Image 1: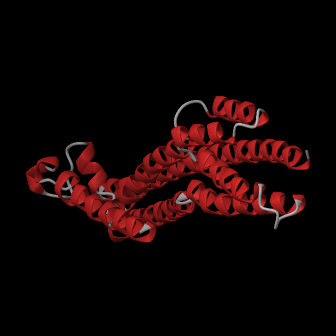
Image 2: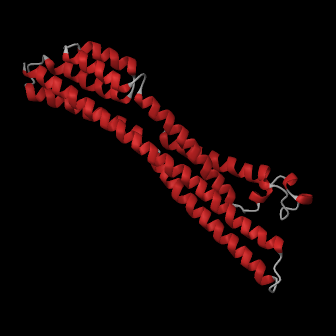
Image 3: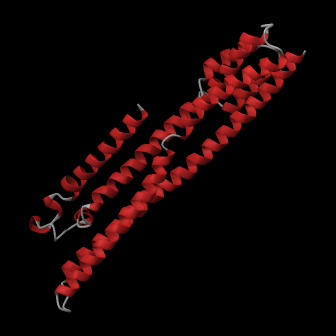
Length: 258
């Protein structure tokens, strides 16, 4: 499902980008007498940047889309309410031996940490009074359940970050390619004129170069800033999860050894 979602988003971004390129930027009203080599406003000038402008628009749309997707996903993973307060309440309940109260807190919070905590505590309840498990085995089974839940939840926090880093690299390369093509066009116009360069042809080539550079940099900046921001937020959240689980395991270990 994840791969299908990503594929659909990429295809839609490309389609929408070229619709914008041809129908919005390339509208006849943006050019003198409908001549695409004579832009009369910024939209028409951007259109002269060439077909790679459409690819850069797609990169920008992808960056914005996955930034929104990550914001929503990470917010959902954090669950409802303040996470630190949730951890504090759960620790207090667990210290008093009220596992059922902790499970109720997990059901209400509904975040990744709550899911991990619930998996571990439910497994602990199953083995706590089972004489087939000694003390160490009970703790090991609880830790195993926590590790399995963590392995399911952590990838959800990190997914699609690689797409943002990939878009940043690709956008830069596409922008550089467009810049190169624009400069080639400018120098070709200069060469064909025999030294008396056409200002119109030269300006079109320079516009192609500069707008591709600007588009590539814009997409790359959005993606890189978002990637670093989300990576930091995920690392902080994972650290909070590890710290909370460590405290819970310490309480459970003391409880088993009593």
